[in-house]
Length: 628
Image (tube, rainbow, N blue to C red):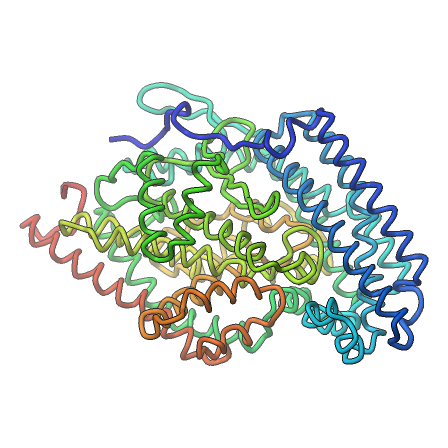
């Protein structure tokens, strides 16, 4: 069996026409014009009432009326902006060659500047309010109390009004432009590779999918081909990452943060105590991770793994057509929660998913809220179980978006820091990882042979490893980049060497040091203009999800309602407050250690299955290649 390609005709493309018929349509043009007008009118409201230019004053009936008007109009304007932003993000990610979409996205970014520049004004104004008094006097304020108090705290980190206004105005020409450049370069890039005796031109996302191929030589050639194609773009990509990180450093300094990490921790609703406790547990578990990698090397029949073996199947992989993944996900989600199952069924039937890898399409996967309680999911599907897990992960994000709307959370409640998709990333990765784990555990519960169990256990270990131990080199690399970028720009060889060093430090002697993922410095997360350190939230989400599932096993009554409430309130409360509702102390390393105990148990089982296979082979070899 090979898993090099999929039949594109069998894979769904998402329905965007129900949002707008296209970027050249009258409906889209009307929505853009309407949004621009709403932003202008909102700006006039801000100017008339001195929002962000003078103190709020005493809380009387007039002040309450102003507050309610500002919040209602601001929230509605942000909601309309989210719809346009999500739509354009989907269009441009799906085909970077769509010139009409690119032009519309560029125009929209300029329009959005006028909305973005209102955020610091609103924050500054909130800081002058008597919160206790306004909450007593206004129902609207009571509903947004947590947002108001959070913004009041964040106001201390604002630059001077003129500087904040300038930062918003320059964003489309600064870090945002660098991010767009990176995405377009990577999505347009192709490379030639020989597969099944035929030379083919593939997109980088298609080449990346060859990490899952059962033939080691194909994986090696794909690894080398992909790295070579990316290195050919290294100069503009290095310029882009230097530009993004330089802007982030400048803004964090001007806003009084000691380091960029402190700024992102605040946005992620956690603090250094929580982060340190999590990483301490992860570092403790590194020897277990190394045991897993050594066992996998034995199963693959090699002395030690190469970087291109990390995603390799250890037995002949089962084919997972898209339809099989769809049915299995719906089944497992429904068993966990009927609401979750219904959401997944709706996502598939209403064509929320763009699954096909193709030239011009960016790599990876994401989910974005787009209209009401609906989302759209971007994928590059391959018929292997890893992509079943990825689909489940993205559907978890869609469920999170759905719950926020179902529980009637306003945009300002869900996204207190404003801008599209500004849920704290730590909490945004919780539902997604739970959904991923649900599907993995469901598949493992139905195994009928040691080989099948081993294959699915490998998938689960891969997932946990990438979301935890795979995060460690990304985190360390980004810290080094910020330190160096504070003094000067980094060259492409320095960026590659820095990423290689970070991976070698984590992998130790278990992976060939010449084959580590040194070009992963080009991955999209390092280029997100408004998000810094978008790596550790995945580790948080993975381990927090395991902790929540452990609570469900011991305290199942009412768990689903509490879980949905956590999702609905994820923009309104700090992570430690939400965790405390489940009896979890995020500052206690023991919690994170307990979550990783699941990984420890799975590695022990993996090693035991390795011995079973060795006994079956009868020659002392652990190689699983002949096991069916």
